[in-house]
Image (cartoon, rainbow, N blue to C red; front, side, top):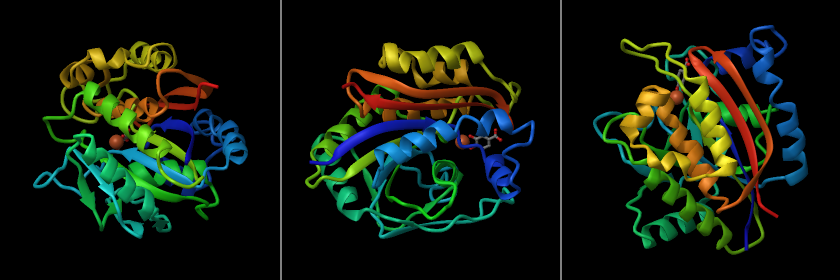
Length: 279
Ligand code: DHB
Ligand code: FE
């Protein structure tokens, strides 16, 4: 059966795309952010994932407000990036792992998750930038399966439901025939609010408590409704639901391989964690 090698969670701010394109990794503004990544590169070289299941939220590139599935799984042979209007370079296409896509869709629907399956899908910065951060050569060494969770238009799925989705994704990966090495990535957050009266809102205490909880007490955030999460983490900080789903794939106990937290990148508290299944 396939092996789930770990879960990696990271912010996905579009400005990262510009910093990469302009080689600003050593710039004083960007350094504390990019310095979080070399330990991740060493870990990736060690665990050698072959497939990435990317849990992220689309921001209006593939789904718009007219049709917005709560949970969607990609089942395309290839996923292309496209212009979102941020003025950042588009990244090379990603090869889909259609075998795992359909296995995942079958498993999730079979366990009562109502999934939208997408045989064509474009992927936005929430997918592409974490890939570019993990694999700076942009010669992607992995095949991919996108899993999109709606955090854009209310009503949002609850933290409890996202945790359950993550558990089911983990079970599906571990039951996938073959011996592929699979990494689950969750992108978004941490606290940020891009609009309204609280634009610029960041909540360091909550972010650090949330990161800590992923190791010490992974269900901690499921006590909060999505409105409470917006209150604590901001209208876009609720993207931390992706972190919760990714963490839940590992089961009850997990160890922290690496973490980084830095305020701010653009308008966002940037967080990075690598977690491994408990031995
Ligand atoms: C920013 C953060 C996001 O998560 C996003 O999707 C877009 C922009 C920002 O802080 O600029
Ligand atoms: Fe976002």
